[in-house]
Image 1 (spheres, rainbow, N blue to C red):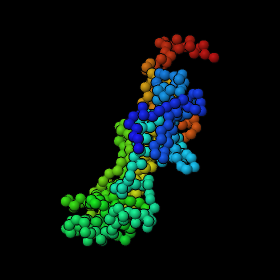
Image 2 (cartoon, rainbow, N blue to C red):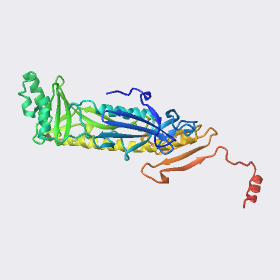
Image 3 (cartoon, one colour):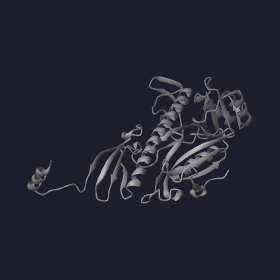
Image 4 (cartoon, rainbow, N blue to C red):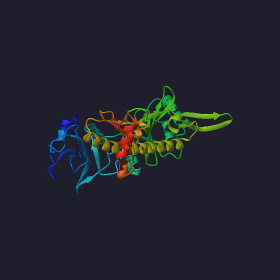
Length: 368
């Protein structure tokens, strides 16, 4: 598979359907990426340049419209598999870095995968055939068989078994545990895979989870991140005995004890909530890029600032001009009409001024 290292690896040509557009295509295995720009596409030109003087030259564009097609026996079909937060078959106003990141996501999806990650977007159906295929490559066991596993020393396996049992993962509610060559275990519960790592020397268990991270007070781009949490056995509180309950603040945001089944459910809920938050941010970002790109094209000398209370809300813009005049706008990504982008206030640095009341009186006297 050819890896795209920089923007120049993509070849552009005049758009075949219009004289006022440009198109670049890139085939990546069974996918084809289409990158277009022009008057009738969701794209913009560079600051200070008229996009439409030479609309068939890629260098005159600062953002593009992008689509991904899956190539099948019946032809090409749109796919949103690699889009984040998209509600349409195309992404508008995508900069060069955005497109290179999209290409990277497509290429990464083609790499061979092993069950060493937790995925809530790729949920294989857990069938007998799937379990058999896993069994051929991994050591598919139930928790109670780990103790007698012939891999590793007996003492080592005792520790593995004890940590899993203490953590509540020896349960009839949990279908299978797949042990790899290392001390990582993959729990199949329902149709979702979960990763557990057992740090034997320190006698602690770690479990992987997905979360949405955003510093709401800085310009750091919010993102989904996979992290490891270290649950601990919640044995008692005052006079209450918890048994095999687990406490894991970083996942549950509480000191309450959960069963292993309950903790897996919280991980699933956290991942779904995080993915939803990322979709919300992505929708806001796409709308923000759309309007700021249009402002940059129309007013190249002006400064555009995001003045939202929280950076990732992207709902307020300040447009400042060299004269000292400025305007404030509201952006509502969930509206599709003219109210999506509205001016809320302005300051005119050169507003009309008179020094004496007689001058004001004479001005008012002439008004009709």
